[in-house]
Image (cartoon, rainbow, N blue to C red; front, side):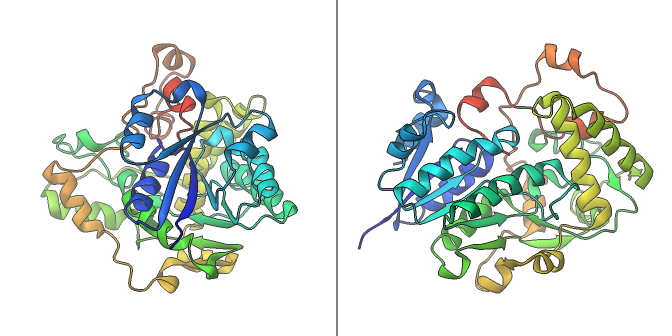
Length: 359
């Protein structure tokens, strides 16, 4: 039986790494990674090669002919580029159409939200989706909600600091808005099913594990850890003020990480924290198929089990490669309004950029 050739863009990133793991576990896939020439010898890429991933060398900003050559013989393309590189996928999609790729999965993999002014990051992605449809290129769009790995707060004892990107110590509004969350590690397992499923061709899919409120997350962690966690509720007014300030700051240079990271994080809080966009019901309203409907036999990682691993010291942190330079800190000083929000996700470094790392 012939194997399905999948080319992954951003295989060394967090989402891309999960997808690589999920596909490598299934012998039906023959996995390739698109990598810049200068990045071939980097440790993350060497590690992928040692696990059987084949490398195709090309730059997303290179000539369309070079991209077409890199896609020769590929059945499915999955893209996991960073927030500022969303529109770099357009030449890739053109090349995919030219060589007859059977399915193109653009970089979605975020929370559910409507297009048109709620989230800058969503609208950047929608620009790519619309271009794919103009090309009449077969596609599947996949969103995954918020990650387990970014959902829980810090404990005063410091026991979970090793696995955290930041304190994550804010509850939006009253903390009772439900939101869908997914273990990062399960994304690859979902993708192994989604990309071979005829039902998902030219469709949007919402792959998620469970739905919780922020207060419920705090309750579960307090129960497991036997520690009381201070609940820092931020008002609707504060969220809107952050969104407005971040949008005004980013208008001139929207692709500068100093500008767009505060914006898309503030808009995440607006979307899933206040509006309640990130739910299966709203996803269905927008036209998504859901993983629960498609794969009722799928066994996701239990959220409480994950938190127990965090407390037990065996969980793995995310974005551990991201370091804010001193120059960057000077350019965007910490403040009450930006501290816990802006630093939740570290900006891209040269190493992550060159490997096409993503969220």
